Length: 428
Image 1 (cartoon, rainbow, N blue to C red):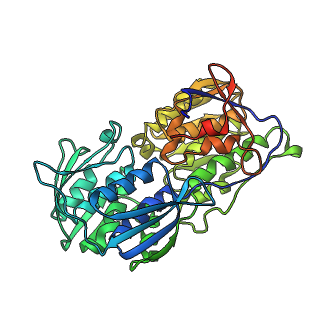
Image 2 (cartoon, rainbow, N blue to C red; image 1 turned 135 degrees about the horizontal axis):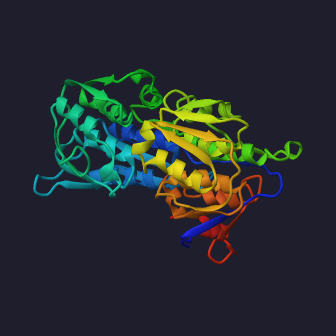
Image 3 (cartoon, helix red, strand yellow; image 1 turned 120 degrees about the vertical axis):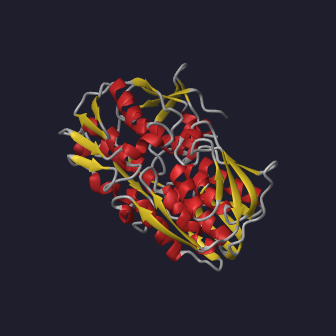
């Protein structure tokens, strides 16, 4: 059943004791799918996220000619066990200049960037396209690095759509900037062994980039000759429920809610695994050195802080699923928050919030952040909440499911006030 266009979150009126499972990491799943395709033989990924972004990656690998089998996961409805039959670094042949092999990447940045590098290892021509927003997102630094490696990339404006002319493995050296996205470096590093590429990552603190470090760690620990690999739960997804526990405990500490995430990340590969350390919020949080995508979750908590909180180094948020800096300022202000945007910094002052209709901008993280706000603030209504399917299709179900597996919230069809059933809350 389709989600209604406008969903209202009803604030919880009693403490919750919950232990939530969250699906696998999107970042690790899509990296692991590329590594599995480049490996020898059969690799089985356990706990892999099954959402719009990872389905896009899986379908593109299948379109390329890789055999990929997908089975349900008995422990988490939005996970899968995925078996990939690698070809030892070989990529199936593409099309021709007049009839290229078409790959549709949706709005999945990881799929767009990783597949661009991967198909260079093939032979023939591949055309990558996505949704209109993906065609606005940066790609030029990756294209330039691949050209330095000797590959031909055709693009009208340094973005998708693009034609990639594969020429197979080719020993060469290149430098890539991660000023706009660390995914450019990750794309090259994932394919560097198979391609015989030497890749240098540039820009200040490039080697400290947590997403580049994740890629390096994953490459080092991946079974290159086939085998089993466990995907850990998504730390960014976990942040919403940790934030919910914090919000729900504000007014009545003696009756505090306890919201934990079951079997969370076991490594420090995901930068957002540090989110719990930022509760309560400090005076300043950096997107560059402190948190990744979960900094958006922290922004939503900031109006409830005892002091003003600054969120710095937010530039990369502007070129993601939406212009997230402006979106956060606009929608939090719509709820009565006092938010100042200066350069790539948001300053959020303690504020008394009220309900509002929230524009999600087709951005899954905007929808999930403001859904959590609705557990505390009456009248929060989300437009187009179906966009959570990008990384967490059963997110709204977990809000509504009874404790301990969920939070027990009521979610309404906002226009009529009807309580939505759990089956209606799955985003597809």
